[in-house]
Length: 318
Image: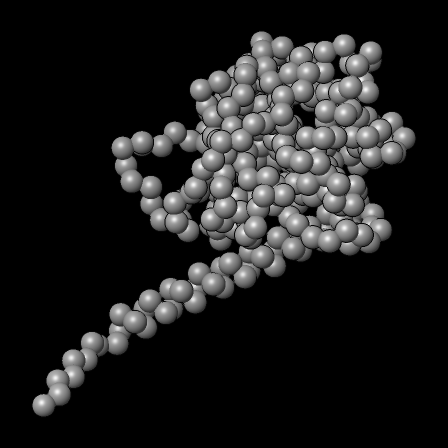
């Protein structure tokens, strides 16, 4: 894929301080960032550095468990549960080198129970749920501003992402990238997280200081599929800040006023669909792109094998 090219970009940093009295000012800042960058960071969110660290510690405790215990909550198509090296990106055709544990608010966590048991990891469930509700409160402030800025009722997006509904699909995703030997060369086809766009409405990312890894390529500046060959920017942010990424769903909902990482296209291109249809279509696009990528990899392997099997000929003219 070649060496990644990097450039410096300024990531908008938006304060949620005094939200009720500054909501119009915050709305203008958020909409401007969503329309031009697709990324922004939030500060003064009301979630303390200590609260974030408590959740990171709980996440560490989960991933430190033996695999047979983590396997008691396996990933399911409901997008809940634990997986390891199982997410294959259409941009790479290979699995991300990571493990993750998806948690939701509603009935998708039941039958079977996708919460790690209290006997295996005491206190994990109440701690995680408390953090999920704290994060949802921040998310709803952002959704209110985006709805107002786009001309919808303030609760337009909030009602569509009401976590009190049993079928709610908002997710807290804990991710663990195992430590690697920095002195060893990176093997071919190794990616911790291949280039991708999020297909949700909005992603809120928490990151520890000194453990950065996020790299972005804004959609309005991307000219190639998956941003391959385009210029990327490494993102570091202050302790306690939350980085937000616009997803495909908001891009569709705003008719391209708000842009995600890389997708581009003409106006008025989105048909009216239900949330279920949107999710299904997103998955179908990903699987089609993944098949095209894996087919291309196999063709390349076959071509190399054929080239190695053909003996070299030297012709000498007299």
